[in-house]
Length: 77
Image (cartoon, rainbow, N blue to C red; front, side, top):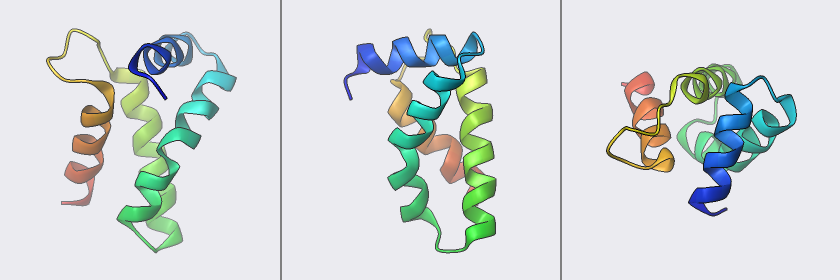
């Protein structure tokens, strides 16, 4: 998925668009599954992902993919 498309989905998800949020969660599902084999931990990571989507601001100096990776790594540490 391109960065402009991700940005569009993030903005829609932040405006309470559940379909956009679901598409973003699906986009990052492989990242979450690669981080843990434990189903409870995966559920926690999905919740962390959703919260991160809600909080993300595009003035950050890095792209959304990197931001999500950093948030998930921080949660796991």
